[in-house]
Amino acid sequence: MIASFSLYGCKEAEDGDQVVPADADADADADADTDADTDTDADADEVDRAGAVTVLGTWGGEELASFQEAVYPFTEQTGIGMAFEGTRDLAAVLTTRVEAGNPPDIAILPNPGQMYELAAKGATVDISQFMDMGELGTDYAQAWLDLASYEGTLYGIFYKVANKSLIWYSPSAFNEAGYEVPASWDELIALSDQIVDDGGAPWSIGFESDAASGWPATDWIEDIMLRTAGPDVYDQWVSHEITWTDDAVKNAWEVFGEVVGNEEYQYGGTTGTLTTNFGDAAAPLFTSPAGAYMHRQASFITGFFPEGLEAGTDYDFFPFPSIDESYGVPVLGGADLIVMLNDTPEARELMKYLATAQPQEIWAGRGGGFISPNKAVSLDSYPDELTKKMAEMVVGAEVFRFDASDLMPAAVGAGSFWTGTLDYVGGEDLDTVLEEIEQSAVDAY
Image (cartoon, rainbow, N blue to C red; front, side, top):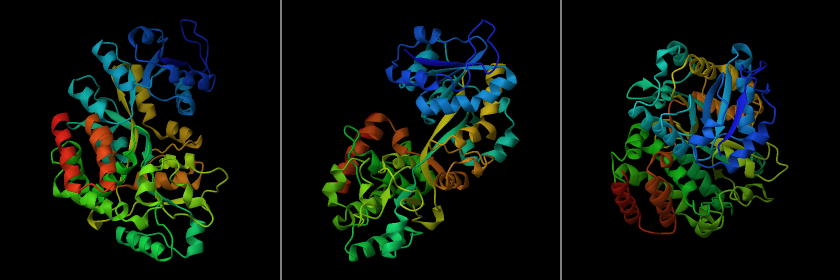
């Protein structure tokens, strides 16, 4: 069944439902998400909707507890409750609910892809009808508003961002070796060469992830594509308006090859890169002496670091550097998008509240890697300097783009793109790799 949680603030619901504070039994209810399936209609009717805005999303555990805490002041002030329904298969559940004429009031999507599909069908609400667009324009960079729009109409608000454009390193190891953080791709390659000359391995890389092996490599290519071809061509690539054999795409792979095509650059060589699990790949940064010096991965990777490390001393990050200066330092990542499917006064009020700094600062203060794209969120809300630096990157980025593979048809983004990177790293001819991915793309789009 779908895991659910009702939140009514301090007042009792009119039908006599028990008063539930924001943190009561949050984890227990959220953990039920691990047993959720996609039998939706009957189960969704079990959720108590009286006096509440229904919200459908994937959050569970600490994420759901933080969201409840963030919404709690809204329920106290307005008396409007929230009934959260959690499922791990959101795309299928939401599609079924919409087709059955029983959508939730609000849905929290892991990327804008499904929003575009729903908007094209007229299933989402134009929130510019009731939101203060002037305030949104002040609080959010135009790039965020554009990504949350379909054919020029705003349908959602981005809420929780993951930053992928990060290169991790050990400041203590860098200091001991006399290395400086590079500010450009050329400096990054020069540093890699210097580390090799000093007898070390510049990079520790792991592309193994069971059936999903190869996805970490796609992130490299996406970051590079943004920096060599720019966001407009990147968007064309995502939507298959240019082919995989296009010069811009091939160039990004060749730049990627400057690292993964050099045996001396990689801890354990190509074999190590292909066989090391992504969660274990950063470990050589923290040995003594250092087994490697740099690791490219998203913000979540700190959860895989060995215990007992001190942020800022044992580990830190620098942004994936610029390659073509005209494209600057874009941010690649993911973000949760809040959209409205039922236009009710209560849902409007909750959407307005969620777009403000207050709930986002509450979640930021609870930690867990939450990063907001809202410029009104105080950086002092974040619990540590590392998260604050990530948030500054996101808020200050002139260009933000979603992980391309997540927006492509699954046969490509979670299929031929993944396997193609492994083939390329393993030594297969690049033209052959790109031609094979292009063949799958022709069938998938």
